[in-house]
Length: 285
Image (cartoon, rainbow, N blue to C red; front, top):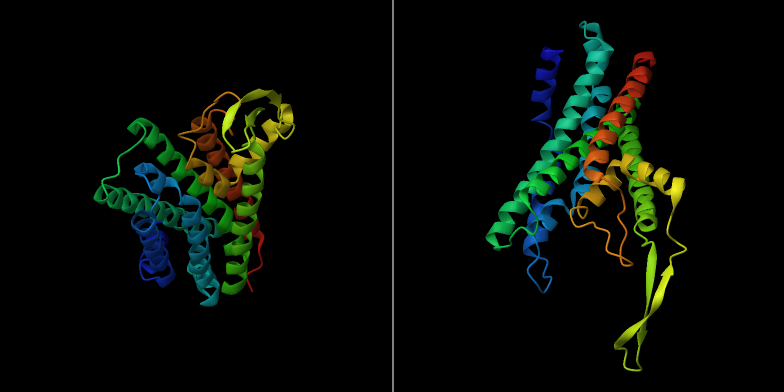
């Protein structure tokens, strides 16, 4: 497997879609820092983590193109004929796809840090919290790779693999956005009073929010949400600010710095097992 991994790594560094993803990750961060005028001085970490979900989405597509080249050139059959096992081939592609995800995420974060320093933006939270968010981002990107590889490697053409990856990323994004909107509902609402000029003149009372998800249904919704790596990456952009301000905002996921890493690792293992099982049984024509 070491020889196979080395050969595939050298193929990766000559892969144009991979470098296109790297350039996109860096330029997207630079554009976000230099060309967005918020009217105030934002925290640097908002640029570092705010667009990780987009980096994961794009890298998922470039990963699918990289893996799809194996079928287009007949490389998978050649590797098996050369004595490599299907397990070794699958794990090699998974390691490279995970590496692409992690590399692009790191490039995006590093570029945002450097550009933020150039604009003299400061950090708004402690470094220990930033490190926790960073680890969660890396593990979410690994989980995203575990989602992509089973579809990309089991499709018979590069185009079908790309389409499958795009659909998976799109479904994960849409499902995550819908769950996010539901989970961010506060448990209580304050009814404010306004005068004829639109000025706040007081409060009329505190009321239960009927849209707030409670009990076992909320526990299940939280689990599904953080099992969606794109949704988890979207949430990681703000969970360092997430709190329990009474009547204003509810914590979307309880103990995210624990649940996201644990769920991501378990999810990656399960998806890898399923994808490997299908690939081993697949008839390579």
